[in-house]
Figure 1: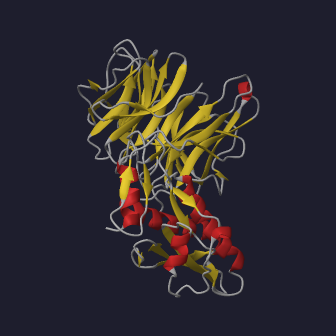
Figure 2: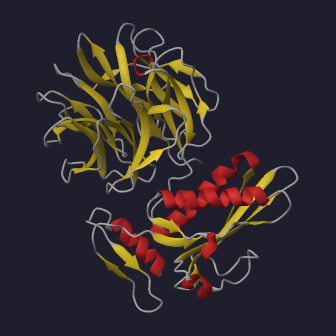
Figure 3: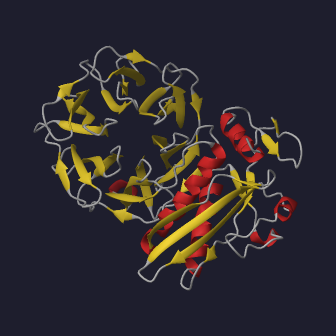
Amino acid sequence: MTRLVNLVLSLMLAATLVGLTGAARAQGPLRIEITEGVIEPLPFAAPAFLPENAGAETLAVQITQVIADDLVGTGLFREIPAGAFISTVTSFSSPVQYSDWKAINAQALITGAVGVTSDGRVTVKFRLFDVFAENQLGDGLQFAGTTASWRRMAHKVADAIYQRITGEGGYFDSRVVFVSETGPKNARRKRLAIMDYDGANVQFLTDSSSIVLAPRFSPTGDRVLYTSYETGFPQIYLLDVETVGTRSLGQQTGTLTFAPRFSPDGSTVVYSVSQGGNSDIYRMPVQGGPETRLTSTPSIETAPSFSPDGGSIVFESDRSGTQQLYVMPASGGEATRISFGAGRYGTPVWSPRGDLIAFTKQNKGRFHIGVMRVDGSEERLLTASFLDEGPTWSPNGRVIMFTRESQGASGAPSLYSVDISGRNLRRVPTEGAASDPAWSPLLP
């Protein structure tokens, strides 16, 4: 295995430790040294992709920048500025002058080319090199699409690079559905919106005529469940992302239904029903049919989330006297409490990898986003603020996005992301206030 792969795999595997740094050497095995809690990002060079014909110049520069931004945004990579380059790349097929890239300590080199055809089709191809091992990592790849989809092609390149270096699946070619908010804090108007994972290409899915809450993607990313007050009380709706058509799931008249989520195969919805001050968890087929009650206690049960294999459901309940997390079979039955720390726990979400559950925790006047093993062990708090809530997982289970609201009368919610080690806390750019994010799977 190359030095480059060893370095980043070690970073990922040791992400829950105190921290580490790495140094690539021209000779001898790579050494990873645990130091003072800082993970040293891997330096890479990404010369502007070459335009293969007239009209591709601007796109080539834009695509290169998106790829670099994707990698830098993980916190695992550091881009070497072009001003430090000794070599220039003049041909996609030219041999690499490794000594020139070693001299500026570039451990990875990304080269590429972009072409635009007369009918508006764009092709993007790239190669990835391990500079110190002096070899190419994998075969070169090529992606094609329309000029309108150039950002997606850039994200696909970045995903391929990320996967080759870390061994983990990527998450850049994905989208996020969220609640866009406008107006003063006590009278905000809300509508559903969808965007690329990095905040680009925002599209609105609903108007602001009624309150909308808690959107959730289907496993295929083409449908969204959400809660709407269109009828005057909360009801669950299903939205088709492409057509933006909506329909009610046909819940019983007079009941309050909310907090929906899809099953892993997309055929079933699990959600909460509130009647007479009590709420329980139900499930029903997406296409309609009889409801099945999964819990029946004189307490509040809500925020259900399936395990990736569809066999279990994690949810929050105050049956023990305080808000805690429980796991039960997907068909209902006896539930096992998994949270036992100080404070209150809510909004649990099962990782797509199946190994962790993310949650919101409130303790001593502070809110946290945290993760724990599915049996409740190894609890780890990733954030702390006046109000952090509502985690959602990236497709590869390595990053969590959530809502953060600042303190004060004018405090507006924003979207943030953090990796599962608690590092790399970043604000996700949105125009105006935003809340309730839900991350899609990787796009097809």
